[in-house]
Image 1: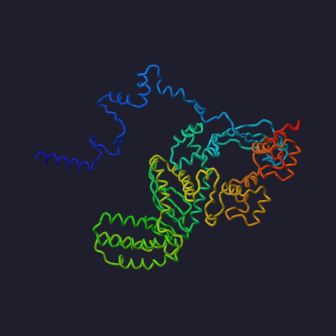
Image 2: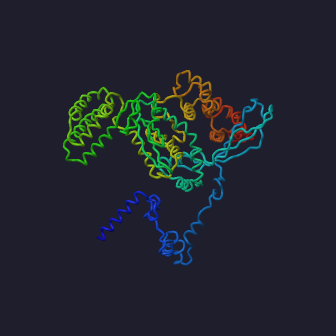
Image 3: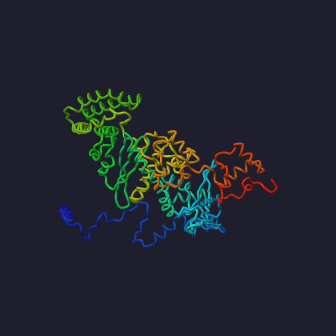
Length: 595
């Protein structure tokens, strides 16, 4: 009877709890503090004794306060480490201040006044300087490289206004260093703090982790046109693979969408899983999309191919759970044989509809024997209803060329994001995840095209590489178009006009770049085609290695046609005010003595 009375008391308490959960003796689960099995918990019943004992057992405590006491005359490891450690230049400063300069770049003087346009300018001798720390890639490795930019001032003789020859205010760290950092962050999933340690250990460059996050965002903003251009390439493709996955933000949950082709990947972030925005994005799309069975894609009026891998996995899982359902087993075995015959044809001939159309009769026969009939088992009925609902969308690839039967391109891109999600899940904002998706879009695109992501960030490879020119739509972003033109090695506007008239210009390069890129980065024709001559220091080093000992030998060398294209014919004009100090300094000789 006592047990029954206790049970009744529990029953009435639970019943009251269901109607009124706000009670003094009730603890809400969502308000309870999460207990970690890896943390020493503070137990008030035992006072501070256990906390004191636990603190004395840590690694650093024993090494600095215990071990060295057993050996007289020794110094604690922590003190010895602090004595041996070099005090880097960044400590106590907001940013890194290098002392040694490896290269000096003098900004060329202005040719005309930026205010009134007159060419009569007075140049001042006083210059301003700014240093930028970078890394240099050589044949023997990577090393620290500090560049000092120098710039002079000019005064207009007409409007009397003063201006500088150029802007020398740059990021404290160079492009190569940021390219190396982003490659580690995106491809190898290394945190900002560990990257700062690597930079200091390998190159001796100090960088604050908080500053790295801010500076990385500023540097990456220059790559946004390239990331946005990837969507234009994807939209121009006849086949688009689409998939989505979840990501936990610091305050809410979001979804990452993947749009992939054979050679390009584009990521997009949304707060919800609604696919309504796809109707606007793919409004004029005439190709085929490959998706899974997510119902959100059904509302898009575009021809769809359902991923057969998802169908196979679901059929196999249900068969594993119900191995004795003979009716269902017969459907699965027949469907597997049908798909295997099709895949064998694809392995032999590729994705060509003239060879795949012969399997349409096989699919019709399977439909009549296994779907368009009455089934008894519950699992068979469920399976046939699903296949019947999406039947036409399962075999779209039989009527088209180069349409895959699976969604592997999108799933591989989702896995690339999932590797990053493991480390930041629940610790990232919507803005942070959107920025990373831009980086990952370019990184994954480089992977699909077999291009080094680091070379791409260093401007050694372009967005047009390893892709058919017909797959590129519209004009390239200015930075990519300029990089393409630099590789053509055209030295002046006249050669550009000749190159354009010979129909060598591809369709993704505009005929009038000064108009197309007027407000998108255009400077002048020298910047568009690339400076044809070496910087002064490198050009002078080249000339000194020739061993020309007199002015007469130098003039003879010029007239014999041995001058390479990267050496100007009139260096005294081209390098005026940016390093030129006479023919003797140019050749490394003493003109007075002729030696």
